[in-house]
Image 1 (tube, helix red, strand yellow):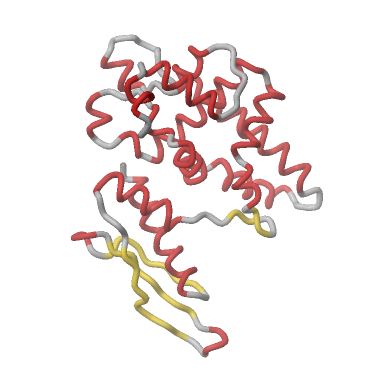
Image 2 (cartoon, one colour):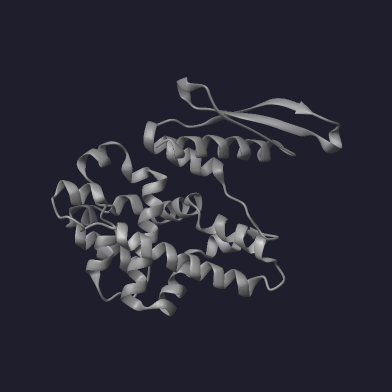
Length: 242
């Protein structure tokens, strides 16, 4: 959003530029504008149901189908339980919020004044909902097959990050982006305990957030793994209480 020409453009034109940058051959601009309109804006402007909640409902179902089909074909030997856990990781709020961050989606959301002032453009749950709403718009506009192609293109970094059937979230990055956007705070980490022999050492880390002190703890077989676990605990706690 640093481009002066884009900043000077009407919101609808910004959305069109954003969609063009994704390489999506769209037909109905209005669907995507609806997908990026939060209920707080609709209520503030008294436009009733002119917000993205219905598209979010549809997009959630479309995403579940696309990811389920992809995993079924990608891992022909995995049992149902493992496929279910993988799908849950790929469609969870953390993944969707991470995808929204890659798209800089918060810059294009239309929010009510109170929601915007409260940092709604960086709220993971709100961003995740908007991504699902975009998928709903793609489905209605272009049909399932083209929608599937565009979803899998967006998901490529996450699908490539599948390691032996597990998705590794970078919670340190998620937490830093969230706390910097909301409070201007950069998380700090420290190792508070080491246990066990050198070849089987377990580390315990905690993450500190400004004046609030310790916001999360975690352990792992390396310092990085312990820090990721601490970041995950803090990120989940912060986002679930918003």
